[in-house]
Length: 239
Image 1 (tube, rainbow, N blue to C red):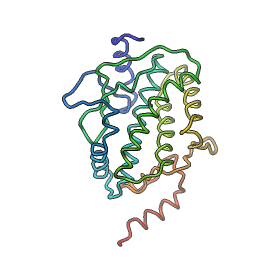
Image 2 (cartoon, helix red, strand yellow):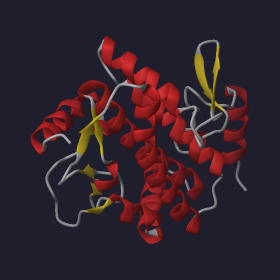
Image 3 (cartoon, rainbow, N blue to C red):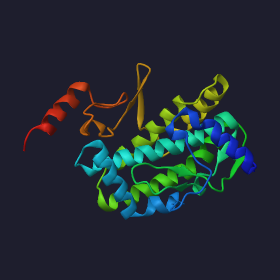
Image 4 (cartoon, rainbow, N blue to C red):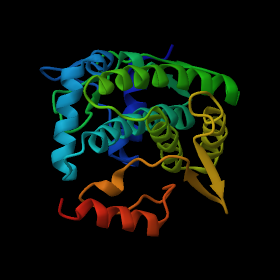
């Protein structure tokens, strides 16, 4: 096991890579275990409602996709960066989350992490199991109030892992992370969620972001720009 001081320094070091790499180590009033927050349908619905307002949509499945995507990206970013840059596997099951319904503000008031070897299959399994478990808990809570396709949510999780990889800096760290993410994406339920077309990652499902106020597709979208444009026109046509 790593010492709390070392974990704290490592978490501080990865913060600059993006907002998704920020995990505070101090407790704030109202913080609760992340798993509890993910399992609470009322709390999850509040996050979906906040996301709907931010995205400018009345479709809760669009907002639910965004809520899940954000958490997946935060979890993968922290887990992958911490291991590839500091050789630590963080116990994400001990993470807490703040009360702000508009964003997943993660905290590790009593962090635990351990050293592991650099075998991609073992590292990938260590990183994947708790993250995928937390996401599965969130998916069940989302569906209590918002019907949404399973493939869409796991497609989000797969894409989020590739985005986390893109934030890892340093030649050695990136090579290590690349091997682990490739192994991650071969695990169920992430397997067969992405394709590579002419060197570009393309999803097999759409995250629905084009149906938000932004009205544009993502760089890895499975929809063509023409198909998305037609859908947007239809979406905005007066009923």
